[in-house]
Image (cartoon, rainbow, N blue to C red; front, side):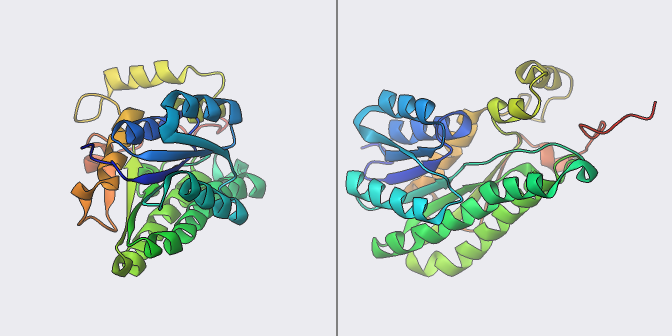
Length: 266
């Protein structure tokens, strides 16, 4: 029997990157998954490749009624909701003085409000069905601030806060809530902020000259494997926990270099 057989999951931001890898891993381990995203062509393609165990839905995680529709679709297609992966996120890289209110609110609306709405929307169906597992994807930027990430870091601190409060409130219903904090988002998300830089090459260079203690940089598959564990009964006593998926970086974290986008004085 597959570890996640009988599990029904919603994964947000599932059309590419970390969300796609997570949806694929959950299906591989036996779950049935509703992929949620705004990138319809990519999302439909991934769901099609995953076959009868997956469906795709166009939805905006910052819209409350879209959550109602997503949960209704997941349960009508697959059965009682057991697992929610709040992965959808956007990134903004700029110093605080060059970050507009619109920049800031765009990030918070998706990353933080989207997670809040997802958690809140899952409570009643999971409580009705005897429990479940909510996995919120935060970041190491959610507890170790990095220059140039004011909006993103604030939103990811918020995700961790929501996680811990939800764990305290929902444990009585058999609902576990944990956060996974990767060292870096998918290359696609970062590339959108730095279109003129070869992100994969930059990370390869960083791995070569300043690798994490484990000797390699993280992959989206590492996040997916951690999510699969937290979705399973093997993690039944974990709740309110932070899973720092960083290869040991935060054991002695140091920040170097200029803030991206800061005019140089030399």
